[in-house]
Image 1 (cartoon, rainbow, N blue to C red):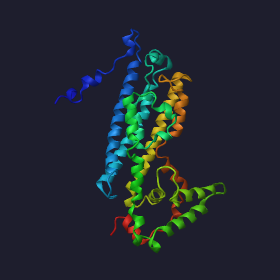
Image 2: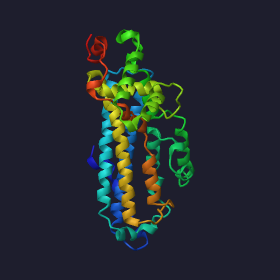
Image 3: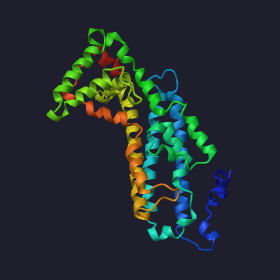
Length: 334
């Protein structure tokens, strides 16, 4: 095996064709522009490779929370997070190109646009961003070729990572074992927690109690993806994450929040870069430019339901005391 053959470098390094050279008006910074975007697409491919493996594991009917598989989910989500940090940093490199440098070849790109990145759209869909929650739904797929539109539409029938996490949380075994709770079930725990949470609220936060009941105590609430049962499990994990058995589940929830945060950071960096490069002009793909990117950045959070759980936490010193039996289970003791 030879290095360049294994990596197929002839194909990769031969894939940068400057449109400006084709019309005999060489634009130096077009090479940077192409390589940045090609490398983005390669990293998107790797992210989806990791996300697909997470999807495969989380799709199983049952998962041992103390298993190598769940550790694999955690490690691969961590890799996704680290790749996303690189993607955010790449904006710094692209910003070494000035607005005048960009204008040397910008008109040659129309109507192509990063908005047509089918890999990024697929990634958003696989994570859990539904079409009805996207900003500018009609415009979202209007610039895509028919076969790419079909790929997005096909994903609408497949379970997302967020939906699989909901099913995983609903299967949390501790709430079903009557031996682990006072009075034989977890109802007393949550009633105690609800009372303590209510006492922790300030004068301007009393509406939080209504929200608490809607999200955690009402199976009839049909808001978002997470069920009341899954929300209780997730909140329990966040509150008692220092117990050994809950450390990896906590890490998985927290990594999802990091994915959301980094996607939002990338969107904001992209928006500000676009504003710096073209001001208020329309994007090459026909969008409103900065205006569209701003609204998408505000709206396109996938794991916002996990972030909201932090609104219902109390101080460690006020946490309800767990039974000795439950503490043993959470500490890997028998």
